[in-house]
Image (cartoon, rainbow, N blue to C red):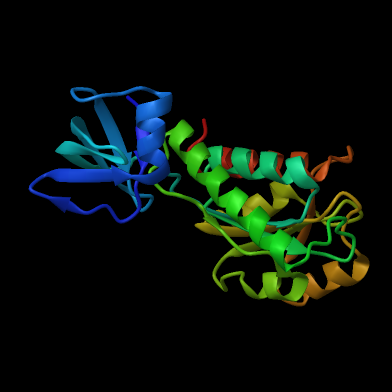
Length: 245
């Protein structure tokens, strides 16, 4: 059944109005009409099943029949802090990380980040990423929309890591093996991991993270692209502690 995102839906007498881009998509792209059934989710875990009962020029109304909680969320809370990647690579990463159940994505600038954006470009990319996480959540059946942060500098990003989380930083030069870290951290329910840019993180950046409780880890002998490393680790974490497998 088609799913649509409506934040903070207002329901009165079991009627829910859909406006804006979602209403246009329902009518003009999917060509749904009165009598068709759809699901609306609010991004915070609630979903509403109902039937389209009224069509207006810029909106439509559904009669809500079912209210239920989303069940497509991992019990393990994962934050990905990703150094800014070039254009489509970052878009691709955000889309796939959403599908793999990430809870929070923090883009950040590191010393070797290639894209250096002015304020208007930062806002433009942030708005595009917001659309990507919404569309990816609709596609994969998630009821929660992952949080996508504004682009931060390296120090700001480090300060966002919750004290109780397992803190990892991927580094190809040295570090502990993932398997060993997993053995020692089975009780953790939250993880915050950092992945650098295409050129890698600097020694100084890694040392700074270690001073804030991050554990350098490596994932084997092969050097992975930044977006590959992020999605690989996210998949492993969901397999070990989350809802994959």
